[in-house]
Image 1 (spheres, rainbow, N blue to C red):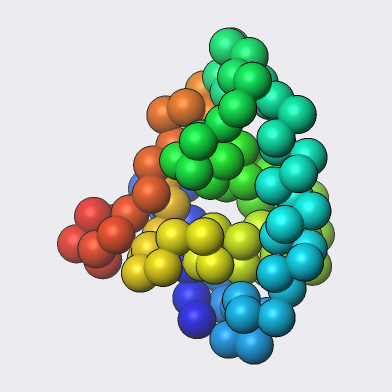
Image 2: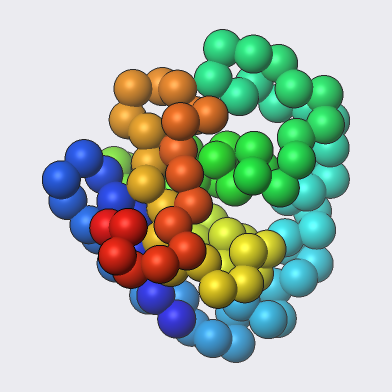
Amino acid sequence: MILNIVIGENTVPVEVPDHLIHEAGEFFDQMDRGLDKGQMVGRDWTDTPNLEQRCQIVADRLLTALETDNESMRVMMAAYILNRVPGVKGVRVATDGEINESELLMDVSQF
């Protein structure tokens, strides 16, 4: 599957093997346990991030992976989003540090 990452005017497709989306559940659960401890979302601390906030946090990590050419992290963060939000087509990632402005894109017309 492909998760399209929209960064400003650019779209970067991240290809994720289908089996990884379905077989990495233990890794995704471990990520969720870490997020259950609370997280900064933008400038605010959130004790219990909801699904959208979790995906915003993960999208920020995905942006970091793109910027540092960390292919394995890029694929795993994209796989997490594809696993947790079935049907998602992409993520518009905030690049100004305001994680809470990142948005899930459910239709290709949103790119």
